[in-house]
Length: 392
Image (cartoon, rainbow, N blue to C red; front, top):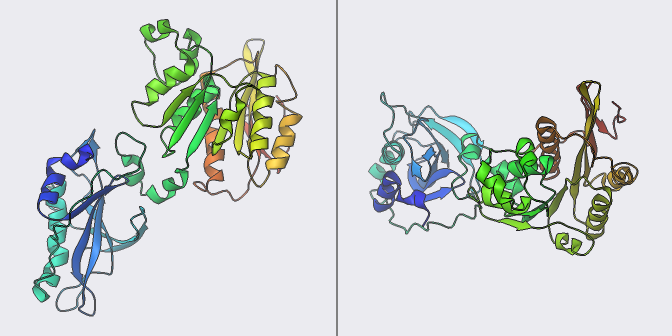
């Protein structure tokens, strides 16, 4: 059983006989009786986004709830005074929450038991007066712990923003991140916060002191002195938050078959031949991927240059790969002497992850591009095929 079900207020709802579930950061109560406009007794679903402190519920600050069903009425066929508003929140329960109700006590709700029982009383009271058998306390056993989430605690960020259904588009099997230097480590930081089942990390280099200054987080001096592989270090860090982090060493022509069964890949390596080996293999395997890199140089006492992110995904997979063959993959050493700066690494990572999320339909993509370039000196972002890449 997930720890959240042991929170006193949720445990009290379960013990009271309500059909309780916790899905995608929402507390869900099923089989809630109500009266329709024509006086029929039906059952709906009540839900609310959870606020947590670790694995324990916190006091609710949001007094509203969501409801899946028709608008509840009283025995005189009048809509109940619930300050109802239409909504369309889908969290993957088989029904859409089509109403939001608002009943706000003067002092708020002390816990989720009080909150949900208050709403159930308002909604189910008329139905029970018409039919005493219309009881919301069904005592159907609660099946706890069936959540397939890879996270070790609930993702309440998605539920608070009501984007759980949209976030579910990112529930793919596996993502590979090849190279965990500056850009790759920031990509990991962003991907780790999505519901991908498995994240494979590939980097055979040690996590050294200079890496601490262009990666997310704040490693201790003791951590740096351990000289662990980057893949092992980052797997340890992000395994505190989620399951499915798998660490591997480097990738080369002898073990590139490792990537054959991944659903998506990010290439963030600074070695030209290695990049080409990996990209060629992913094309052969039919695995969509994004390549990201920086090209910064010191001119006088200022930095100039650009970062470039290429998405080898449909509908421009062929064009994108061709641009790589004549660009980063063809120019050996383009990135291996480039200056690395954390903010540029983070920006390249953000653009790469946005490209991935657009590919999966998380973000709208009205004007698809396969290449995105940010030029430092101009503060300009361009995308191909609509615009040409621009220089320093």
